[in-house]
Image (cartoon, rainbow, N blue to C red; front, side, top):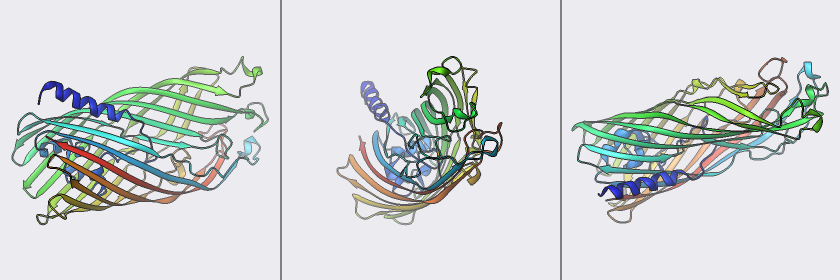
Length: 440
């Protein structure tokens, strides 16, 4: 393959990843990076159980399984549902203890999205493979009306990431392959909420100001992995994605500010926030029971305990600092799956997974009303020609109902002025994916 063809293929991968990508996920992670992997609920993905280059997102060493050169493009429709079933809010005793009025019929606060991912692997020789990928590994969108009852805790949350990853794999010997890659990650975040400025005036609820914060940053990290294949029918893979730290910088804009406050409350100001995406470790296994039937499993650990608080510092002394306690805990994901080659051209897939939420009841917020979830997936792959394969997958994710029990008890606490909020959500997610693979 000529150098200009390699550059063109890489550009196609990067261009695909620039499409919008955001959705409600476990925490704010987006596992939906491979449609062939989705068919088994991502069981065995870090051991290359899906059979194509998209497994390199989870373990770059699996590029060693690719024969020749390969381009993979995926699109996954993510349809989360998070309906507010009930909600009530009250000001703290120090703020008068009055009921906070507002809408509770806000419906589904999560937004649908299409998440693309692209991969290209170039074979230098039998031992060395070079690759590049474009993904949106982290993201979420939740959106409420500005007059809902929990508006002081959050209105709109929009997090988007675009991750570009050059990588390589090298076969050390016939049973061991290692891989390494670089992460170049752009993050953009938007947070909106309503502030009860009437508290400062001694008249709670008399003046609601809307604040919108937008910031972005570029961060860097790496990926690494190993693939061990003691038998032609058996593989074990271990993949690692590093943390990526972002120093988000942007602006805050305040709406509905009366002219009388112009001298003490700026209409706009700078804003900064530091956030770090968690490390992820994936362990997968793949075993062929026969020429047609294979089984696989996956265990994944995510270091969510990095996320202790959401803190935003403002350039204006009048605005100070905004802080929200998160106190997330590390989470685990488990999956089992199977593939069956119905014919030489058609492969069928199925899988089940359990995805643990990092959020406890005491710290759940309306920005991410997440809970534990169970995955059920089916999928299929069909070889249109010897060089082209199409894959499809469908997943229904059963998400436990989630509750909020946020309290405002102290004028100096993290929820000071926001009031106490109690709410219950009904949740589920549907995923529909399509993928094209071209080998040459």
